[in-house]
Structure formats: structure tokens, C-alpha cells
Amino acid sequence: MAGKRMTLNVINLDTVTFECTYGRGCDGICCQNGRPPVASEEAARIDKNLKKFLPHLTEKARKAVEQGGYLTKRIKSGKPMLRVVGGWCVFFNRGCVLHKVGMNEGDKFKYKPAPCSLFPLERDDDHGDYYVRQHGYKGEQWDLFCLAPNASSVPAAQSLQEELDFARRRSPNG
Ligand code: SF4
Image 1 (cartoon, protein in one colour):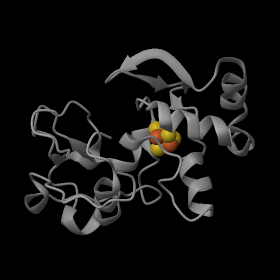
Image 2 (spheres, helix red, strand yellow):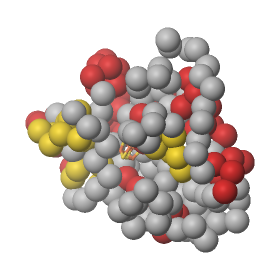
Image 3 (tube, rainbow, N blue to C red):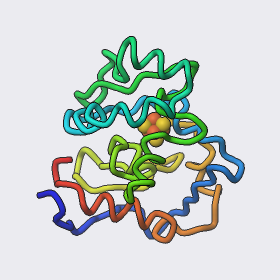
Image 4 (cartoon, rainbow, N blue to C red):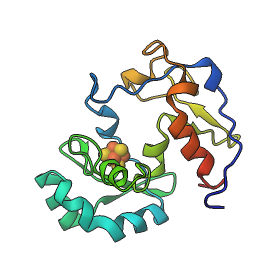
């Protein structure tokens, strides 16, 4: 139920470290070819607010979205994936435009697809629990440096408080 806080089980939360260094050495490479899947209710929210986002996109991305939309025919987890232009998500322009517009309205998670809001948390399909993505854990394939176990000394339980809170606010099936 929307707004209800769930108890969250994050399998490896107490044993791993993580730190997002976007703007402090990282250029936002998780948005480079990231192509997150977008749920229908998320797409509806983006559609309704698209005019707000368009002026903030790169010119190339804006033209691509205006001509062909922001979703592709590629499907992941049963959902269409975001479009990429020049190797970057169409919503990336020196940071995530959906994040920036949402933040200006008081909630940075308001418009972003859930995988982006949750990152590096991911739901374990087998059990429904969450885990923190790390190289060498559950067959992690993405070579992002921030997912290396020794990339940071900050406990994930400390650095991911907002993402954990977002996960708690999601419906059990979200
Ligand atoms: S929607 Fe935003 S956070 Fe997600 S991949 Fe695109 S630019 Fe990055």
C-alpha cells in the first residue's frame, strides 16, 4: 500500500561498504548505458511531467525524446527500458534531470525509475529480500568501480539510509 512502511530485510547490509562519489571523482557512470526498466505507473508520471524535463535535457536527447519517446522496445523484467543517446541515458545531463527536478520539488525519488532510486540496492528475485550490489556477490555483472567491495570504508547501512527508506516505502510488489 502506498505510503506504508515495510520492514526491510537487506541480506548483506551489515557486512558491506558503499559510497556514491558522483561529483567527487565519478561522472555518473551508472547512467551510462544503464537503461533501467520503467514501470507503467512510473512512465505515466514521467509522461505527465515531460514538458518540465525537456528543457533540461541535452539537445540531442531532447530531439530523440521528442521524435521517438524516452522508452525503447527493449524489455527487462517485463518492462520497457529507457532510451540511450550517445551512450548516456536520455535523462542524463550533468546529473539526472529527473532527480534534479524532483529534488527541486522536495523529493529526489519522485520521478526516477525505481532501479535508479534504489541503486545499489536490488531485490533478490528468489526471496523478495533486498541486497546491496557488490562485485563477487550474486553474480554481479556490472563493472562499476563503486561496486568493488574495497571501494569505500563507509558502511552501506550508513550511506544508503535514503535508498533504504525509499525501499521501505515501496509496495511489496513494486
Ligand atoms: S533516469 Fe536518471 S538516474 Fe536513471 S539512468 Fe537515467 S539519468 Fe541515470
